[in-house]
Image 1 (tube, rainbow, N blue to C red):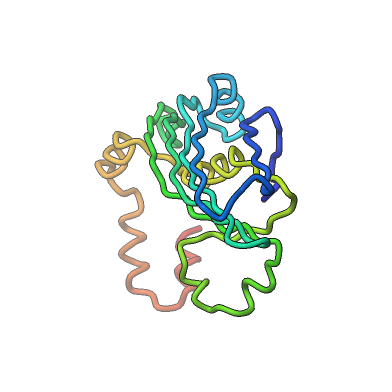
Image 2: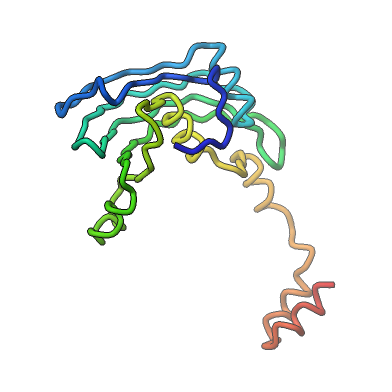
Length: 182
């Protein structure tokens, strides 16, 4: 698993790989209010109301563990234009294959390139399911959120460069275009 900001207090939900069987084990996880507050700060959100997930975990063999499920999150972020809050409710699928032999997995099967399953190296005998949910949420968050109001206001504004736009359309050399934009 990635170690981009590993804080055990954030949302730590460990599972030992030795406790897993070949049949699916279903686990549900939900962040507490305190964990949501810590995660909101970590993910630079205004507010994280809920983070939860339901995961099906199965041991494929001694070297591979398959995790499928879904992540649910309710959060608020600031609009990059108006700075007003944008409330979002996300439900997203999650599919991860953890493997101890990453090279063997990648070298034999080209169909893995088109799979919806994310492959990660299994670093230890423990899986932090909470961190998997947090990383999935981090990938879902819009880095440049815009409210509907800000998009409407931008479309209604007159273009200040309309004269330059006409000139640019007539030019073919990109360096000529750059000169007009100075």
